[in-house]
Image (cartoon, rainbow, N blue to C red; front, top):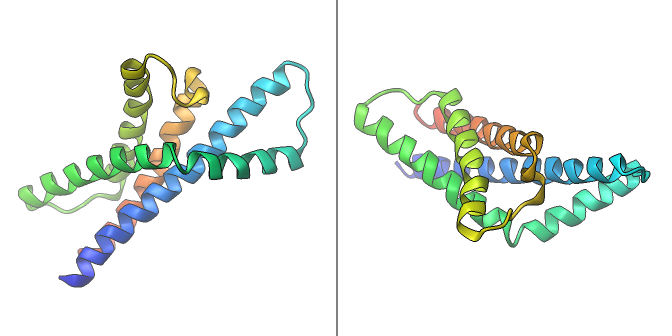
Length: 149
């Protein structure tokens, strides 16, 4: 039982971190693509440095919000699956992760009246965030599915 609780926490933590890191890097690249479209040159060194700075900067704002959304979604999925006495499906965690992140950004914009994360103003940027949520969900699902063996 103790191992299972640790795996749940570990799975959620890894999934959240993967979603955040990929989402932050993807968001940075979307913004830098806009800068490049204005005719300014963006070197690989600049891309790496800006991505690193964004990871640090967004860890205080975007990370906690993503953590709440993803943990709530995956927790709800775990609750439903345990009540149904069904097997966990890795791909379902990915779908829930993508759905949580795809819903999170428009929901925040609706509530606050402004896009909290600039890259999600474009469809491509929002989809990149959804893919990051799906990747984190897959990691979470993989770890969670191992705990039921």
